[in-house]
Length: 184
Image (cartoon, rainbow, N blue to C red):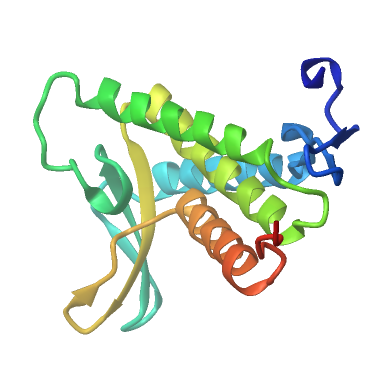
């Protein structure tokens, strides 16, 4: 019975091969905690030292620190929406994403180091932004990358971690070459 096999133990597959069952314990919990702490610390500094909508130039013509609130979701989607349940909706979407991340983490094999690191970065970033949503009703964004009149969406440490994590998972899935189907 597979249900009785603890996570991390070997399971036989119908074709006779063996697989190691993993759990969310395969995530890098220290990295998740580091991302959450860095994200929350930088957001607190921005809130304390940069007034809302003000900016501090870091690299002229390229990077500014700004203090803005993102009440929407990724890339400012739903930011302009004025619905009384917007905060509840965005928080629910964030919780659903967290559940998906934890589910996917349970599927990671021990040899999928990039995916494990990527999911840990994504989970740390998702938790960091979820803390803002629950505590403030919005996410504090503060990194503004631009060139001339073109501006990327303002983001924060959590967003950067999520993007880097997604890139690592993409590399693992598409370039590591370990996911080829076995012939039957």
